[in-house]
Image (cartoon, rainbow, N blue to C red; front, side):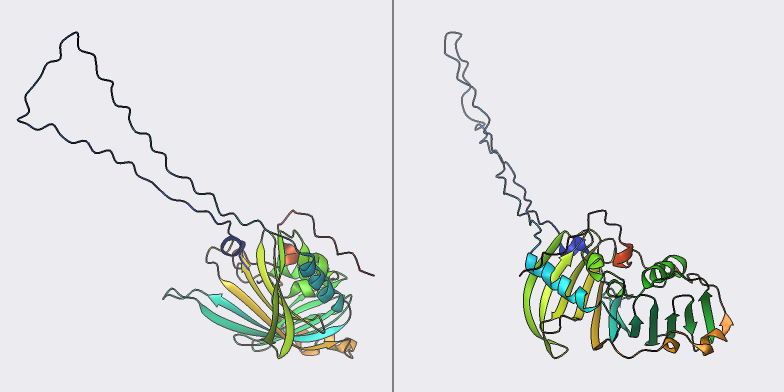
Amino acid sequence: MKSWLRIGPALMLLGVCGWAGIADAQAPTPSNAPASTPSADAPKAAAPKAAKTKAAKKPANVYKPVIEQKAMDLLKATSDRLAAAMSFTAVVGYEYPSKLGPPIVYSTRYDVTMQRPNKLRILIPGDGPASEYYYDGKIAMAYAPAENLVAIADNAPPSIDGALEAAYKNAAIFFPFEDLLVADPYAALTKGTMLAFYIGPSAVIGGVKTDMVAWANNDVFLQIWIGADDKLPRRVRAMYRTDPLALRHEVTFSDWKIDPAVTDDMFTSAKAQSAGRMKFAAPAAAPKGVKPLTMGSSKATPAKAPAKSN
């Protein structure tokens, strides 16, 4: 979710720093004052001690990340809902730097159909160049319909997890919602958890009641809206820690169907297979710092699933 959220700006440990100056003023001796020479027997005046002034130290206002059980329970509930076949539409908004300074937002739509453990179709009509991705457990295809070109990976990995990993490593193909597609979404969503807390309810996303959760590991900060009744994700906002521009990414989900009727021919394309061939390789470098949660560098132990209450 990758897009989505950058920990640096979002989880910054706040500190208060200040400065203090020390000023010592001495009045000069008037020029017409009579000079006097102290006698040898006169007691010597004690030299004035320099005033020692220490700058008052203000205690650092340090935020200590917390992991709330309620937030983890909601992530577990939404992960459990994604355990079967499903289809949904994801509209991704991502910022891109402009010459004026403020970023411009671009949007991409994804129409997703999947059947666990090894079938996936993602149609991307645009904005921008349209593309299609098919995976049937044996072959993965990335198809550009306007150019009628296709990249085919024969002998693809036997699972969705493996196919997504291979697509990212070999061709920089990255879908911002991959953590929802893998076999264990909860493990992907909670890997290296550093922060998780419940924000509160909302009723303005997708026309349904949702619960808002904040979550972060060492790579990404996420804000997630989860359906209060159906426990399906409705929106995710993300910022990536290593993105030097601190750009924001957002995914909005709609048209959820759990266990829809699917057929094998939905996960392949005869038209794509007959198109001109291109290499299954990255045309350009991936954006810096942006990567799937499943490819995260966090070495922390994934959070354990919360114990089920009786």
